[in-house]
Length: 254
Picture (cartoon, rainbow, N blue to C red):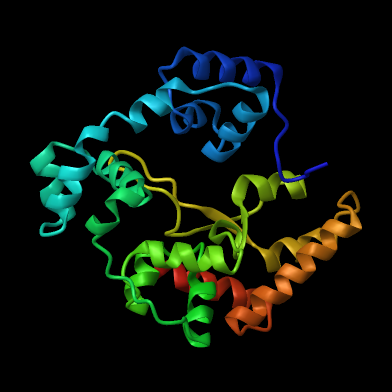
């Protein structure tokens, strides 16, 4: 049993099926209605064999603009490109993401990433800030080009930045069984209209509180202990208070 995941109700499943099958809502839009993350929505829809026509339609909406937009972007800024082709920030980002994954557009990549190997200090800096600060911010501080360089490095070390320093607030409360204070980070998806910044409960806090809850299985508590020890090693802290203060300070950096 996954103690960090909220069970799906029959009402939620029906709502998911109706909204996804209608072809009018994307997974992020459905997630907002059901108050779940879009990844959970996509996974459940895939498990149920539901296809999302709205996602595919919107993904290919600007297919004809990929090449001209990427050509224009080579010598202009993102805002200039959005204005020139009348695209929103989210539409531009989606178009570029798809375009950068297409081999035929490799020659149109506006890539400022460095190709040299990451140093130990750079990797530690990444681990200290991943899931707390934006990937763009980390890349800028390390002079590593765009957020894609950070994303690729995280992929190479098989890490997920979202869970680097703790569990999402709601999942943590479901695990513990009672309300707990979280830390608002600067990491997480953002669009023109909405911001979904992560609110996390640090691993050190979760492990400390789990020791007083008999219903939490030993293997989960052991995992929390390992994560808490790793977190303190990465941040160079020795106490729960110092670790929490370090994360809060990191989240305030500009």
